[in-house]
Image 1 (cartoon, rainbow, N blue to C red):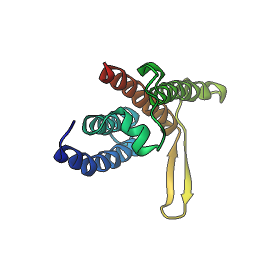
Image 2 (image 1 turned 180 degrees about the vertical axis):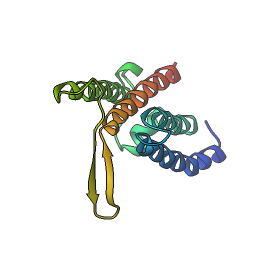
Image 3 (image 1 turned 60 degrees about the vertical axis):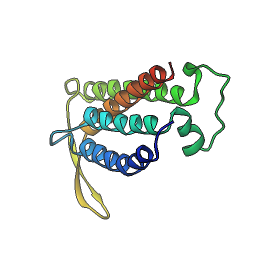
Image 4 (image 1 turned 90 degrees about the vertical axis):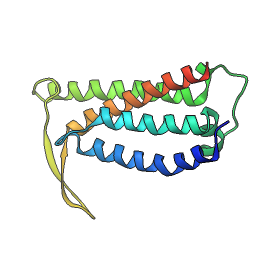
Length: 153
């Protein structure tokens, strides 16, 4: 059981952490940051939610699903989703590396183009963002799986 102060702090701080995580993720291909640090900050936000509430809060409070208490932590739907996110990230990282070879470049070769977005105008889109997204998924999926399983013990 946590205090009202902890839950209130979590409600205020978690959105701020997630905005900073997205910002660091998006600037990672041209400035310090990227998928790893964005993923670590995202995991920190989820860790704060787990401390303030618990793992089942995500199922019942956020996703509005019934919690299945007869399953082990390894079979928990949320933990299974974290493992799938980890595997998806591995596929994205490998695919982004092999894409360079398929296109006749070196492994993990980077290319960029400019894309016009309605509100932002011309924005540079680098292929490194795809690699960073894969790293983000690996970090978030892996660390949240570890947090969930260890936290349930």
